[in-house]
Length: 115
Image (cartoon, rainbow, N blue to C red):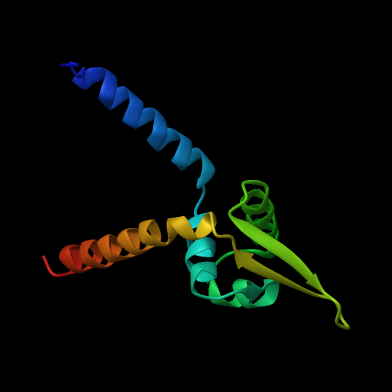
């Protein structure tokens, strides 16, 4: 029977968590993913929906999410040109994570406010 080493197992999980946190670093990426898990959106729609994000930050985070294959960027043949973003099948695997974070955040907020 194979013995498990709790310290090694914990270190393995911590390393995996660090990878995820590096990928989703910053204030806005999880919000962008959560929006795109609901529906595909144009750049301007994302900018309006995610209160407080600047255009520069949205552009940077969208590029990083695209590089990491979590979203796709599609340029539509319209005048003026429209750019639409959509969650990938791979990116959609984060939908449960965004729901858990959202639920926890709502519960935490309620707990702190209702002390």
